Structures are given as C-alpha cells and as structure tokens.
Length: 292
Image 1 (cartoon, one colour):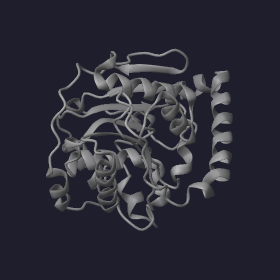
Image 2 (cartoon, one colour):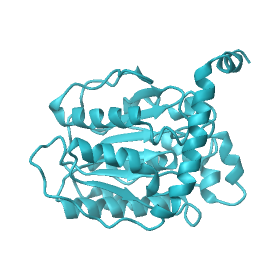
Image 3 (tube, one colour):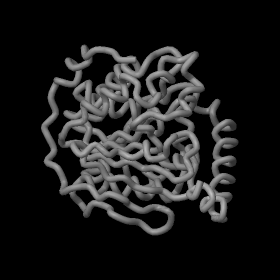
Image 4 (tube, rainbow, N blue to C red):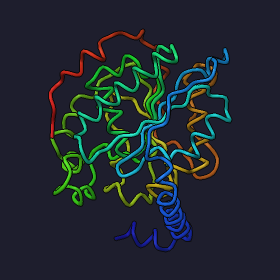
C-alpha cells in the first residue's frame, strides 16, 4: 500500500489520469476514421538513410490505425519517407494467426519500398505481435529496430476480462503458453529492442510487465512518467523519443539514454549490434506451431 499511498499524494498522478480520460474520449471519436486499412504508398527515397527505412505501426487490442496520428505526423515531419499502419481484428484470430497477417504486410511493404529492412512499432497487443513475428516467424532477419509501447511482455491480469470471449485474451494472461514461449524463445539477434512503459498504465498489470527484461534481447526500457495506456500512444514526448531512437539506429547518432521531461531511460541498451543481411527464412518460419 505504500506505493499506492505515495501515488495518491502526487498531483501529477491526477493529471496523468485526466490525460488518459481525454485520450480515451479522443480515441472513441476518431475510431471510425481508421476502420479501413490505409493504402500502401511511399514517396521517393530522400537519399538520407536515417529516414528512408520504412516504419510500420501496429496498434493494440480494440484500436485501429487512427490511434497513431501523433506519431505518424511526427515521423513524417522528421523526414521519414515511408510510414505504414497495419490494421487487424483480434476478435477473429489468435496471436499466431494475426502475426501471419503482419508478416505478409511487412513483406508487401518491403517489396513496394524495395527496402531490405524495416522498423516496427507496436502498441500494447501490437508489441506482442511484433515479438512473436521476430522470435517465431523469422522477423529478426528483416526488423532493424523493434519498439514496443505499453506492451504486457509477461502478460496482464486485466486480460481476464477477455478470457471468456477471445483467444487473444487467454493468450495475454500471465503464465499462458504464449507468454512462456515468448520468454523461453528470447534470443540474441541484430534487432535493436526498445520498450516504453508508464507508472500509470492501468491496463498492464503488473506495470513491470511492460518492461523487456530478457537478457538476450538487450532491450532499452524507457519510463514515460504519468501517462496512461492510451495517452502513451499519443504522447509528444514519446513521439520525439521514438524519432530520435530510429535516427540513432541508422548510425547517425548515439543511442538515446535520457531525454528531458517525462521520459527517462531506466536500463541502457548495449553497444550497437551488427545488422544481418535479410533472407527468405521469415516466410518459411511461419509453419511454427500455434500456442494458446
């Protein structure tokens, strides 16, 4: 009770919850705008390798691409020439099936953009899809930087609300077969992992589940203070941090270890990893077994 009592005494706790309420209302209002998938389109490469790697945005459970308006705008303002958003329906498919769809979409984006690698950013369930794609479907061959935002990497107790009516809800429970497989299957690769989490995320329980702690992944865990589950997705501070991280990943700057405001890195990433050449193993790896 000590942590809860201290949180109740902090004015920023109430500001953060108010911000989350506003974000929820905005998400509901803009949801119809993202019901249909966006057409794949890319501008001509700029010749600036910091910004020509495609960026793929994957939303969370119960949302759609409309939630990415802040980060999408910030990436384009920074000069990224290919920002793509993926829509999916978690009510009809389990996580492995959704990841097959994600793999197909990423292959199409790579074909259209003629890019050997991509950056992928996942919010909430989108981060779990990203991990499964990288660890089980050969995505480590094509993903450069993997960013998760408010993702329950070790499951979340709030998923119990979806246990009775969705396969995905069962898979997101702590200790599920899928969660155990993700933990046991974590291995070193050239993928650069970054995980953003918050102290006020009410949908990831326990909050520490949003941190990537498997040593093999050598992840950078970044605390964004006083943001909720949805307000994290539209945080300007987080958007600026993501842009800086992606630019640094291209070798044009140092890895970001701290930023002003409500963003602070809590566990620094190791030295930059060499980038592996892409291969065709990702598509072949989709025959991996399903879990539930």
